[in-house]
Length: 185
Image (cartoon, rainbow, N blue to C red; front, side, top):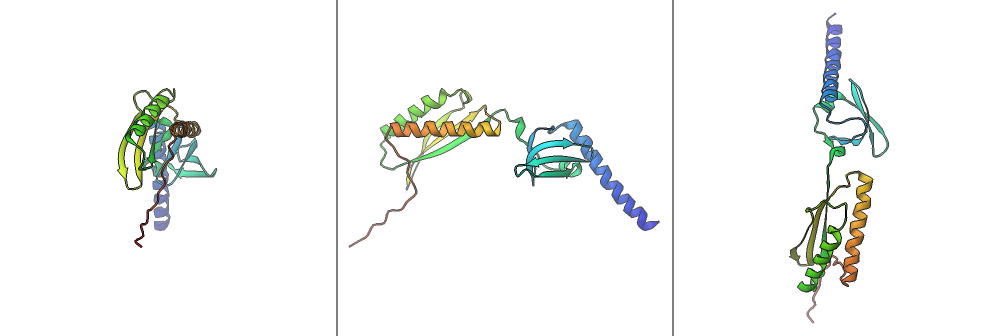
């Protein structure tokens, strides 16, 4: 009776933890079926929530079943609840780019990017922020209303294309990391 009681008590404890975790998830609703979430170990789309466990379809198309006791104690990022998504890029221009050309590029980028309807109003920041040994850095920082992952990738491609067109129009190429070696003869 002693060993059986211990085994039964441990099994009942595990069931109780999962049940309370399931109740917490179902009542608090940190996520719902269809949300894209990220935990300590997994990320993917929630396919099912029961009192015992939650099933997540990962990016690798595998189905992971996580006990609710584990999920209720974990940090969860719910990517589906995003209201806006941040986009930033650093452009490295050659050191020989003159300050007038830099200001022209910044002005044209500001004009083109601020007219994009997917860019959140007043979120666009374009700054000449640093001079490094391998180039001049311009930082572009903005928020977009494209929160769905696939739409966000299309948006990033559009923004990158706009940036390249402005640089081509200004006849400026991006710098690449390199070293200059001077030889004494």
